[in-house]
Amino acid sequence: MIQINGHRKMQNAYNVATQECADCPIRHRAVCARCEEDELAQLEEIKFYRNYEAGQTVIWSGDKMDFVASVVSGVATLTQTMEDGRRQMVGLLLPSDFVGRPGREGSPYDVVARTDLVMCCFRKRPFEDMMNRTPHIAQRLLQMTLDELDAAREWMLILGRKTAREKIASFMSIIARRDAVLSTGRMTSCTFDLPLTREAMADYLGLTLETVSRQVSALKRDDVIRLEGKRRVVVPDMGVLLEEAGDDCDGGLLV
Amino acid sequence: MIQINGHRKMQNAYNVATQECADCPIRHRAVCARCEEDELAQLEEIKFYRNYEAGQTVIWSGDKMDFVASVVSGVATLTQTMEDGRRQMVGLLLPSDFVGRPGREGSPYDVVARTDLVMCCFRKRPFEDMMNRTPHIAQRLLQMTLDELDAAREWMLILGRKTAREKIASFMSIIARRDAVLSTGRMTSCTFDLPLTREAMADYLGLTLETVSRQVSALKRDDVIRLEGKRRVVVPDMGVLLEEAGDDCDGGLLV
DNA sequence: CGACGTGTTGATTCCTGTCAATACTCGTGG
DNA sequence: CCACGAGTATTGACAGGAATCAACACGTCG
Figure 1 (cartoon, rainbow over the protein chains, first blue to last red):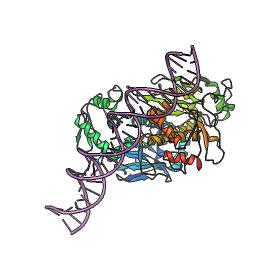
Figure 2: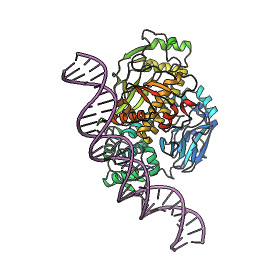
Figure 3: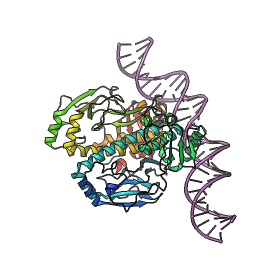
Figure 4: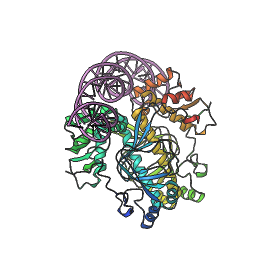
């Protein structure tokens, strides 16, 4: 059985005072992953950190963005809103994920910190300049964008074709998978914290918060999951959860 | 009133015999858009054309892809399928769109020609090599991938939060917009051909084909659209259609 | 003509949304 | 100390929209 750190408070152990890229927890997965020492030194000169509290809006939809950034620790979301208030989350930003688009002024989405959040920011213009002369950055950004596109497409299947129960199971599978990159070997059980409120999960999955609550309760009743408090989830058997998600069970964690 | 070419047969006017990139209809929008003359000459050496008939599968999910390609003319789709047969379209490929991912072996999606289709193909390895030494290609691919990601996110809002009627109206707005790049100035009415069957539209929108059919009929009954045959759509007032789509009406065509 | 692919329409079911009441936790302040 | 309110979560009753099952229309092609 593995045990994964919670998202809520304790995970922001990375101190902003720690300015060394070499010690950065996302050094090898973020947009800078492929950079050499000298390239890293250049990035180090134009970077700065920002902290946000859980609930704070990082960027308002339509606002001008004068920086791009990597999530160092914490969880943020991208959300789209219709005039009548209907909302759909369109991006879930976990540590190492990149925010902002080179070559574009504003953000079309609200970016909201869901937990306390540390971002490693670069002013947009210097970053764009550097990208143009540093293929390692552009290459890594392309790779990450393609990964995001794959994730978006998996998400589209969830939104378009899965039942409420399958949506919840799929979401939990995704969280488990992303949290478990540090996993050692194969295991069947797993514990993690939900990084989102029921309402945010509803925005993620195209449901109402009531339906989310009901389906979480149903999965608990059927012993697919167990709850410790409202947020901590224990999955006795990941295979069962993946089955409930409607995914190929030989995919995912058990490969 | 503008008149846009149909998708079905006539649009494949681009002859495969026409091998000159300079004459290529997608020269300025495809992955090669930023290439200089000499770069184009290099691409020209590794490219080859392939033709597919409507309905043909270009790539099977899971298959090894030994090439990447641009859509020259026609329409193709990316589709994901669950074990029990539920399907969700996750990509709509129109002329100039790019297929395939550098640095990956197989395709996770079925790629299907929805009309007769001409593709400009590059063997993967030579293309990747060229990408590594040609920033213009990598830059353009990044830009196109970011655009696709934006489209995917708009699509997620449609799938997650819109009603069946809004989904149909949104789809028609998207087709109208993508067809109308050649539009001159502002106009309110518009004519186009639906590039997909009712069933494929259902896969696109996360609906059943019956619901698609019903909602198309409803939009016709309410005079939001008119039909000429089953596929040709006349929109008397794009503003009304955009309203039905639930989008910001000051966006889209009327800016 | 009959088979097939495509599309339309109707009757019915059921999943999820909507509206509403209640519980729990955590601060704040009397 | 407890009352109070805000934010979060659970659960119930009910309604509605889309899925399902089914019949039928239309055009093409053998």
